Length: 315
Image (cartoon, rainbow, N blue to C red):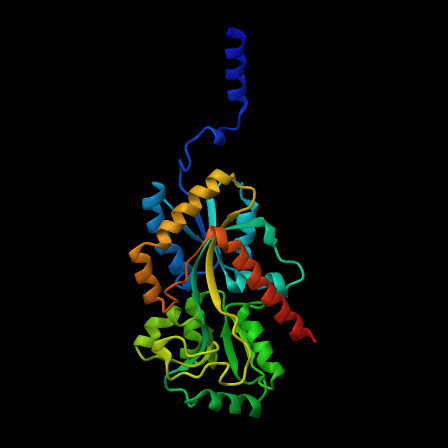
């Protein structure tokens, strides 16, 4: 019996330290693959505060901008698969798997913890822009192909895919990438770009202050009541939608028990009244949240659509 006890103690001592510690027992880093002030950053900082109450540890948000989110994702997959790093993962970054030859991560290197925000994107102009309707913009684009500049989040993104689709329909724009959200938003205000491709909630302060206005909504219907007077892309005979989503992911290979702890905490955040208020403020869909159990299927479905769309653009 004494020998068995000694053997058992030796085996326990040989186990990795992380299998014996309470999880989480130290801060969980929240990687934001974009600069401060944008929608991904706003989501991470709202969630970080709510997750701290759930996980009982601090959840510091760390901005790692660059390469349409690719730099942040590279950082995530380079960390230890121990559950102490999570990241915001959005449609624009997901699109890189369909639009770039050698993305810095693979789809199977990520485990989604939940889809947090879903919303249509739109094109915006400065409030005093000479273009009053989308038809005015379309007419100008046809008259001067490539002259009109559109501020986008990055190359290879959903933004650029939409612009390439419109080019195939005779509407050529020049995409101008801005890694920092603030620079992207002020580009049209300062005259450095003519239009902005963005989600309405991300520029709500500019909309409320009447500095910007939406001119085209990428959706089949006029789904947001706040933009009932804005033409949808389907109405404009542009079959391009590519809705934006923002999710939270952890590195694949993380212990399933730790993934469950994180996913359960994310689900409680997704059901929190404060988070619903955040969705409303962000002009997002009320039923945006998709739990971890269905999130992988959702991401795979979105990637399939993006890959098909990207293939069509190459033809």
